[in-house]
Amino acid sequence: MQQPNNEEFSWDEERWERFFSAQEAEEAKEAQREIEGTDEEICYLEDLFVYQLAKDFTDEAVEYIKGIRTRQKEIRDASEEFVTCSAMVSAYIAAGHALGYHSEMTLAGNVAMCRRGLRTLKECYQVLKKIESRYGVTIASLNLKGLAEEIKLQLESWIAELRERKECE
Image 1 (cartoon, rainbow, N blue to C red):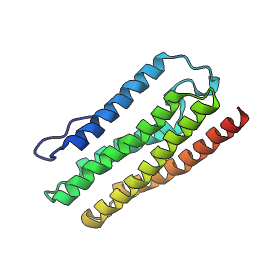
Image 2: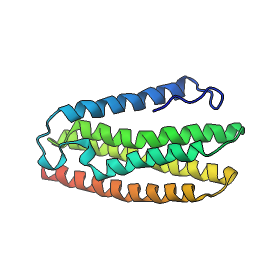
Image 3: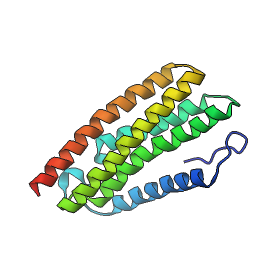
């Protein structure tokens, strides 16, 4: 994640905390790559399709926000919130993956983290609508909405699969 230009954004402690949390999640993903999983289907985080979609969503969110040039504080604040939320979706999926798939307890934790990711995705969607109401609907914002909907469906499906695995434990 790039640190924003001071002229564009003013960050308070809460925003820095979210920024560092996202960085910690990225470090956790790196550590997970080094650990060999016992579930042959889901050894690496990058094998999760929903995680890849969430990462793509973050990348597109950043590009979308870069295209917005405004001095309106409300839009700047919403833009910061949108990028932070978008990064947290994949971070929650990664955190769930890090918990594992090996017992009822870790599966339950994995489901809980994925549900947080789903709630955060819904927040992203609401913030994007707020930005659109002030900045206007663009092709990029429509693409982001479409990708958010795809992630929502994939994440709901993934949560259902994890719950099914939990019941089999």
